[in-house]
Image 1 (cartoon, helix red, strand yellow):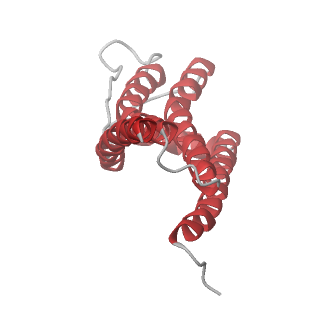
Image 2 (cartoon, rainbow, N blue to C red; image 1 turned 180 degrees about the vertical axis):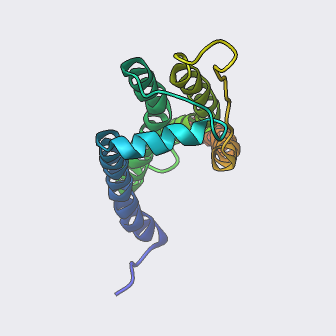
Length: 180
């Protein structure tokens, strides 16, 4: 039997999306652990950061720096998924047009918007660390831009703006409710 009201449908779907956001976060962490346990995957990833044929070494310093820099993007994605989980959990409780919904959307958008600069910084630092042992003139500073991250950043700015507007709309709705 279908849900009797649109709000009931929103609540039902929101429970699903809340769990999905948590599941995706756990999956990202699991995949990250698997990559860091696979030396061949790290070698392939390092090679992709540099111009073809560039000599590099996966030294402990390069690995540590790559770990920190690589986790900037992962951390931002996990923040966005956690905020999505919290947003949908609130929707499931019927808390929809409230200031916190706008704030959560704002945080999701901000996290998405920061993925591109984090990825660019991460690739730059990793390329320097990977080629640090090369002789002078053969060290590389490579800044990569992933089109998917660029689109995610653009979508993030849109979500950020919608969140800002939603928080303001909730504030106005609350002000109007106080008058009545």
